[in-house]
Image 1 (cartoon, one colour):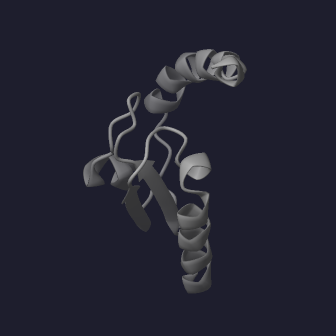
Image 2: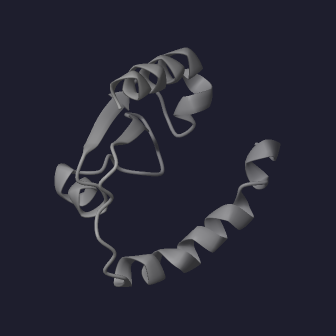
Length: 89
């Protein structure tokens, strides 16, 4: 828990910036995007395809067994997926 406290300022800033970002009409990214999500994340819901298409035209969404810190919980799987993704782009 102690290490999670270090992220509180990050989340506070994020919450202040989200309304600004959502109000801007930026075009979706054209570059390939890989999104990995933990299926048991207690804080965030898995984004829908419609939500992702507003952000990126060419995206790959991988839902993995795990929670919020998927890159720490399943680092071997995450690294493997990143490697495979980069081989294709």
